[in-house]
Length: 201
Image 1: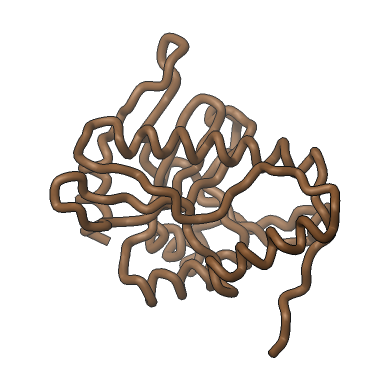
Image 2: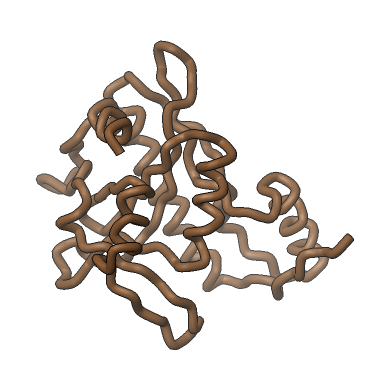
């Protein structure tokens, strides 16, 4: 049996980046639960812990693989609070930029598209992509995101540091669900409304 290659131990830079991702997931979970019709349960494995020792990180990494398999798992499971059944999942992305910054969009790496599609096919639940900015949260269904990629309506970029292809869908194709108003986060679109939107895709 082949074993997954274990990455090098991650340090404090990883802690910062994934700590921000964890906070973004907490914000989206709050939005999911804000009206009382739904509740959020953690599904993925975002973890901001820094591991300086290789053996400790190897154990942590293998545990993640056992929980997720070799594919990608979305971050949040959304459950109907009344029927107690799962209705959709959320893949959360974080940007340390304002949503008002020019050319901002919802971002997915090219390598994430296939595993998310596989997860959708095997589990049957709609996937919502939530892009968290410093001042707003936008959402788009995975199906709509993929449709725009397939039809040339998404921007393709390759980051120099990672050399990984990334797709960006403009925010005018997504829906704002939260924003900063008077210094506090405010809900613009309730999760039950988003659930009905997902049913139409």
